[in-house]
Length: 269
Image (cartoon, rainbow, N blue to C red; front, side, top):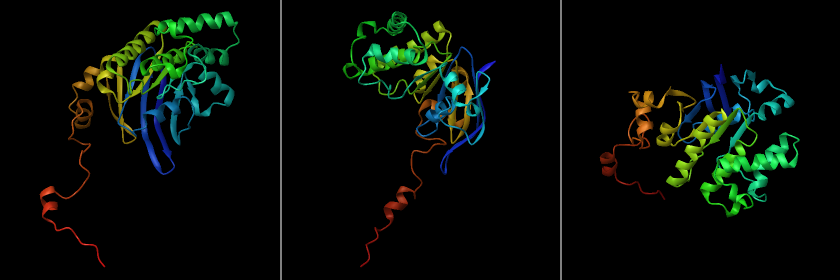
């Protein structure tokens, strides 16, 4: 049984349509990437899956539950099983690294403080930052900040972990560390992971399955090898970062030679 099922999803921000009949499935235990350009709705999809937004049409099922039809108590209970790594990391700047990791554990469960301490130190050790427990977020490098955010996302041992642009702005070493941790933690902890990103090259090395979305719909899906072998014009352009294809580099205009022959118009008056 798939953990997440999105069926004929429709959603708009006012008059701006984001999804126009999107359907996809996230199998249990796998790392799945949602790829797409800026503004394609990748982050919006995570908000819909977690119940922060409600669709205007279609359905979203998580662990067999229709998310947008749950009451507040049932939705809160479902969210206890979700971990989220935010695009900007989202750490509490006035709390130490230790307190950031402890926060979701204390929020969701009434545990003895000694057990909270053990859980926090184990999560920090998993991302290689147990020695940074007393540091403040403002003192961390970009890569360290992402690793703390990753530790917080898995602090409560969720069934599903969602990563919103986890590689953005990272140097190659930090990026590889984060990608390796996502893969390793998914397999060791038995998670199901959704990675939302525009980083094609890293996703192809990391994930089990890929969905590519654009213009509010699904443009392609498959394993990394299947997508790389695809002859679809859009997928070939997107996956290989080609300047020419269905997505044009040049905004529509007259041919350049024609435009150069035109005399510039003078303002009247």
